[in-house]
Every structure is written in structure tokens, then in C-alpha cells.
Length: 448
Ligand code: ACO
Image (cartoon, rainbow, N blue to C red; front, top):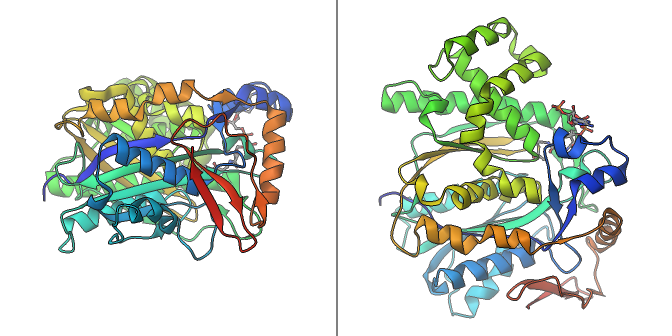
């Protein structure tokens, strides 16, 4: 089997968002904290009629319809999510409704969970299946679906919500370079959800930032070693055309790329020229721990990496800046942004991916992109995702209404015996939504 990877993608995010500049003012944060400090423009969120299940249904249905894939041709369906609606029943089983209608219940796979990493675990499972002896010739389908919500406080502006679906198979336009993978996993309490009565996580924000950067260093180092082993030459940021990061908020993505640049400097790579090396020289003596805390290093490497950032990273920023952290969907929404922006020019290029899930689990891996025939051509994927129009169609909600919505959702979380609002005018046709939850906590969805 050649070039196993992503054949097709679709993305869904709710039609409602709050503007970060207005939220900043409403929260009494200093002007620029959310927009420049975190680097975010808008934050999408689910109202009471949507959740991770409805978003999953919407995006799967849309992908199958738009690429004209027969539901019978799906042999494995994997879901990545960290939004807990049920502690036993997987989100995957809810999605089976779509396949049962066509008579196909012969579909392996369940949900994968570990913070924002579940989508990557699901993707690896599907790819491994296609590459294995169990493969029966049908497609794999990966769904990343999350609603990222935080209690009032500094983490709240780093929420978001979306679902992504990816069709997996051989001869893919976005195929895995399976040999080069660098992983780091460890036991840390940086972000976790121990309170099962609440949808909100417990977060140690500062620790999560350092854990993310440490994981990035380790994964990059391991990726580079594997690349060098197989290719017989050093890997540096010059060897990849695009870098796509899990994006809790854009500032961390800027810092991450600068950190890779600093790594290249420490490894004496040609990607860092002589003048830049001289500027970074004073920081070469810092201990590893000091290097994560040193503000001058952070600033200097960000300035030096800026022109490369603009070329290799900025194209991935669109959806993450507009929708916010989508947890498992965040990394793939960033990849979708690159496909949307760069389209067929990606032919022949390498895209690096960094997946991070608190707790923690992380992997760096890469894709080789090549244009293939319709319907899985890069231009068709971009046009089906239709990102510009989906962003354009959204409605801006005031911070007051957003906060009111969050309060309602707190009551609804884990609740039974309620009907949702009949007001669904903001949802576009084809969107699934929650109508009611009965006295036995059973959830009911319909398609608009
Ligand atoms: N204008 C411009 N920049 C500003 C302003 C302003 N008025 N005010 C603050 N800033 C800058 C700060 O200097 C800081 O930037 P820096 O990191 O480059 O110094 C940035 O804005 C954020 O300000 P902080 O004071 O550091 O923010 P705070 O600590 O209140 O919250 C945090 C930020 C920790 C990210 C919080 O939102 C959080 O906990 N989020 C959830 C955890 C998270 O997303 N972690 C990332 C990895 S794990 C995951 O994906 C869930």
C-alpha cells in the first residue's frame, strides 16, 4: 500500500462566535491581552442546540455527501475527543446512525481520549489499520470533535469548538512519512478534568505552556534523529515547507516555531545564518530549564525566526485564530488552513505536524503532499471545506450573551429531561442539532 494518509477533509464549526477584543473589554483585561497577548481574533462556541455529537454527525454527513463516498465503503471509524458526554458510550456509536441507514454496521473503531491528542491517536489507528493485514480495502474515517470551554478566568478566552472529518486510505494527497515520528509521553498535571460533574478542566496555565515547549523540544529531537538515521543527513527547519502546531492560542504557536529555530541554532544547522547565530550565542550557555523561562531568548528567537514564520507557519493560523482552541480538532484545523490557503502549490511539499495533549502525550510527524485526481485533489478539498464562506456566515454574539450561554450550558452538562430551544435559524441546512434529552439521559438529534 502506497502513500497512506488523508484522502479528503471537511470541517465544521458553530455559527456563533464572540469577538476577542469585545471579550477583553468585557472581562476587564488590559487592551490587547487576548488579541495581541494571546494572538486570537475570535472564539467559536456551541449554543444549547449543538455539542460534540451533533458536530460529529454534521461533519461526517457532509464529508460523505460532498465527496460522494458511499457509507458502505467505510470500514473503520475512529473518533478523537476529550469532551465527555458519556463515560461509557462512545461518540462513535452515535455516528453509527449515519451508517446503519445504508446497512453498514461492519465498522471497527471507537473513541480515543487524551486531551487534545485523541485526534492524532485516532488518525494513527486508522493509518495503521490501512497499512495492516486486517485492512479489507475500505476507507478509514477519523473524526476530531471538541467543545473547549473554561471557567471564568484567564483561560476562558482560550476556548473554541469544531469538528473535523478525515477520510483515510492509500494513494492519498496528504500521505504519512511513517518512518519519521518523534513521540514524548509523561505523567504531568498541567491540564486535566477530574471533576466529572463539570465540563471545565483544572488548568495550571504556566505549567501547560512549559510542558508544551518541553514536549516540542523532545519530539523535534527524536524526529530529527530518525530522519538522520534514514536519510543520512541532518534535518532542520529548511527541510520542511510548512509547520503546523496544535494551537491553544496563536502566541504559543509563535513561541513554538521560535523554539525550533533555537533548537536548530543549538544543533549548528545551516537554517540559522551566521548573523543570527551571533545574536543567539549569549543564550547557548543557559541550562535547559533556564531556556524555557528566559524572556530575552524568547524575544530574540521570535524576531530572528519571524520571516521564516511568515512563510512556513502563518498559512496555518487562519481557523485557529478565528475559532480558537478546538482541542483534538485544533491541529487538523490548522492543517486545513494550509490546504485552504496553499492548495495545489503544496504539490511535492513536506508539512510538519506537532500534536500535544496535556497530561501529557505528544508526537511530531510529517506529511508529503502530492496532487491526485478528483475528487481527492487538493483544490477539491479546499473548495469542499469552503472555509472563507463558513467563517463569513457566522454571527457575532455579544460577550454578555456568550456568558449567559455558558451559564446555561453549565446547567445542561450532565442533565436530563430537557428540551432545547426551537431557535435554530443560525444553523445552516444539513446541520445536526440536539432537540431533547429524555428522563433516561438519552439524547436525540435531528438534521436541519
Ligand atoms: N497587550 C499585549 N499583550 C499582553 C497584554 C496587553 N495588554 N496583557 C498581557 N499580554 C501578554 C502577556 O505578556 C503574555 O504574553 P507572553 O506569554 O508573550 O508574555 C500573554 O499576553 C498572556 O498573558 P498572561 O498574563 O501570561 O496570561 P494569563 O496567565 O492570564 O493566561 C494562559 C494565559 C495561561 C495561556 C491561560 O489562558 C490558560 O491557562 N489557558 C489554558 C491553558 C492552555 O491553553 N495551555 C496551552 C497548552 S495546553 C492546551 O492545549 C489546553
